[in-house]
Length: 365
Ligand code: OGA
Ligand code: NI
Figure 1 (tube, rainbow, N blue to C red):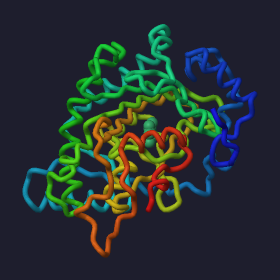
Figure 2: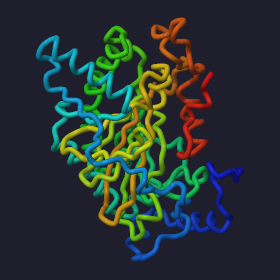
Figure 3: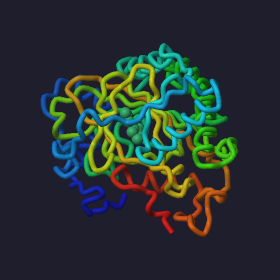
C-alpha cells in the first residue's frame, strides 16, 4: 500500500507499522492489550501533538447541543411547526442534536449497550473468528480499520455490521443479535419521522427525503473503548465527519464525545434514553450546504469501558442513481455546490482517505 508522507495523512515509520501489524495479528484488539496489564500505551497510539485536545479550545460546559423533543409531534399544528423550526435551527447551526421521546424504550437501548459489552468481554474465539479488515464482509470485528490512512491508532475496538436486505442475521454474534435486530426494527420508524421533519424543514413536501431511499442500508458500528493508562497521549476516535446521510448514535453513559462548534469543542453530555443524531456528509451535499456535517471526536479515558453504537443510514449501495444536491432546492440564487456522486463511490473515497480529512471537498464544484 502506498504511504503518503504529508502531515495530514499517514506518516508512519516502518517500525511503527510493524508494531501495529504484530498488534493486529493478535486479533485481540485494544482490550487484549489492556488485559495483558500494560502501564504505557504502545507508540503507534500516540497522536501528533497538533491533533491532541488543547485546553484553549474547550467550550464552556454551559454550551450544549440542542435537544429535540418529539413528545408533542402529534398534538397540534403549532407544536409540529415548533419542532420543525427547532430541528431546522439545530441542523443548520449545530449539525448535532439529542432526540428525546422518540419511542424507542430505554430498556432496549440499554440491552444494545449490554450486548456490545458482552461481545467484547466474552469468548475470545468468537472475536478472533470475526476479526477481519475485509470491508466487503457484512459482519466483522477489528481494531482501527483505517489505520493505514491515519497518523496514529485510536484507543478502541469495533464490531461492524452492515444491514441490508441480504444480511443473514445468524452472522451477528449471538450475544447482541436479538438486541441489534430489535433496535434496527425500532429505529427505522424514527428515521422515517426524522426524514419527514427534515423535508419540511428544507421547505420540501414531507415525503421528499423518504422518496430518496436514504435509509435503505444501515451500517452498525459498535465501539468498545477500554480504559486507557495514558489518555492524554491518544484519542478514542480521531476528529472526523460521518460519510452517512444521517447518523444515530447511542453513546452509553460515560461521555467523551465532543463536537466542533464555532472553533470550540463542546461535550455531548449523555442523556439517559436519548439518541444523538447528526447530519452526515451526504445530507450536507443533498441540502447544498444548508445542513452541516460537523466534525466530532471521542476522548480516551482512564475510566471505562465506554461503549457506543453509531448507526450510519446510507442510500442503497446497489442503486446506480447518482446522488447530488436536491434539484427542488436549487435556483439562480442557490446554485449547486457539489457534483453528483454515487453513494458507493462516496463511501469508497471516504475509506481511502481515513478519518483525518473530509471527503466532501473532493466533490465540490
Ligand atoms: C463514529 C462516531 C462516536 C462514539 O463512529 O462515527 O463518531 O461515541 N462515534 O463512539
Ligand atoms: Ni462519527
